[in-house]
Length: 191
Image 1: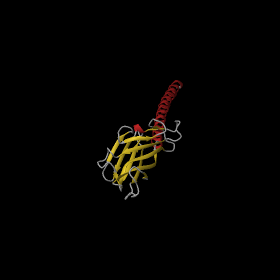
Image 2: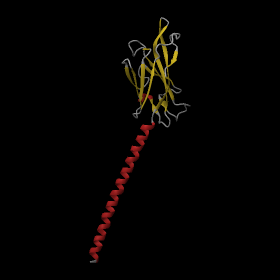
Image 3: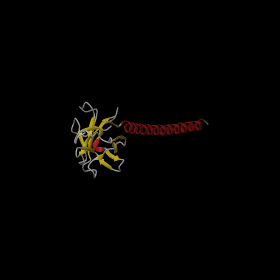
């Protein structure tokens, strides 16, 4: 009777040890997966851009301003954001007049380019020697729209989608009518 009890006891200990091993393995796997998911979610939520300002260059015909031939929009890393490479981002531009364009990164076309940056690369990062992680994107309407300009009264939306999938959006209206004292090539604030 003592040997039978001993065998049952050993069997119970073995079953408990195997069950404990399975539970520990499963808990470790779930912890790793949860940590990975948390890091990805945090990166996706915190990686973002903030639009600072937008200016436009006035286009005038016969001394009368008719619209904006190009605009410059300045973006900055959002608070706590990871580095963002603008060439890995997608820039979309829409107007209420039906114009739409999408650009994969900057400096890839004559219409959209990096107009101003304290360093030559397209990566916005607070880890670099830059005092501010800002960049100014320049969009020229000359080759993009049939009129070569965005007419006064046009609403323009700009959406930047980062490689992580976050989106930053800004919208502005080109005033209508434009100030008649504006000359061709003058710069105005659009937002």
